[in-house]
Image (cartoon, rainbow, N blue to C red; front, side, top):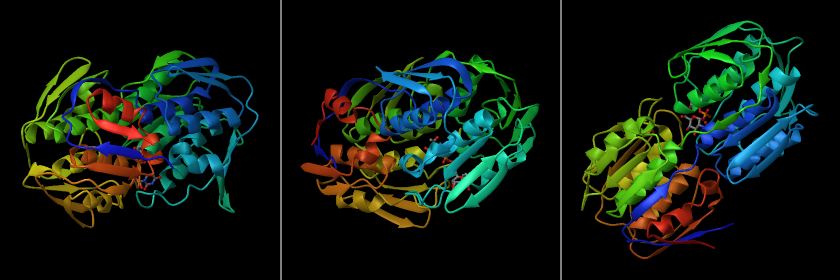
Length: 417
Ligand code: UD1
């Protein structure tokens, strides 16, 4: 297992480019298998999760290449409609491949996703929706088999929660279904709109992205196209928090500031200067960060759950007490014990974390428990006095391309061993 060695207290300064959004790239890669011909996806981040998605595509018979952040996927004849457990477990969001494979092959078998680092992550909404679109579902020996005797049939689906993954899975299954599908209480995240934009460019007829009602008119065929993935708003938040805890001043390039409104307002409240241009954000930290009013994670356009750990790490060196309430995942605070090793003063009571800001953190040896929790440790270590060692950084590599290189370009003392 690799480690990051970080000597904190260097002020970050300079420019950094934000890579493409993991959470867009994954469903778009799943969508490519619905298309005849070749899809070319630019701005695809080189991440463990993206590689896992490419391995699923290869496993079921697609020809894929991945070079310089561009993935090409050529679909001729699919040879397999099973995602084996080893690939399912590599990436929990592999569930979104089920809708696409089912639509393309009429059948798909997946292993039930195992327990998760963020608490139970059920897939009931996915299963119910695929059933409503006409699939028979059988669960046995840890496998779930979806079978459609004929082309899937459009229908009305009311999601009891605006699940990102379930909304994507329904879109993927319904894009080539027979007739019209309407998703009520759909997720509104920018990554959903990105998936819809890709599919529409391939010939789909999907309307209402970014609202809570999405209407999909199924088409017979989709054709591969050339598409560029949107920037990753959570990676952007990570660099902003890293700048904030070091009293830094950086310019983020290749960002979409309109996706970061809820996040930017928290940085501003903490005393940072945040200036947005069309594709860039300038952030300058104050001498001392201030506490902020209670943050409640919620669905888009509210404050995203994935940004919670990053901002919590930042607030651990603010002046005063702040509170973060986690409303999406039950068990998201596992990384807090690791942050405490670095001297953070945080109490967790159920879904609530109470952060008493300290003047400065101190170096420690700690381990990543999950992707964003791992990034929170990096942010904290950049503030800490002394040399920190962060273990199990494979979690971080699921969602960040070259984080050590980018931070060192900004002046951080960081290296991977
Ligand atoms: C996606 C993102 C993840 C982000 C999350 C919430 C990807 C690859 N991942 O995950 O980074 O943190 O959205 O913004 O895009 N739920 C159910 N039943 C289901 C599905 C979900 O109860 O069938 C619950 C989950 O347990 C969770 C909540 O709904 O409590 C949100 O999950 P969901 O929006 O589906 O998140 P993901 O798509 O897994």
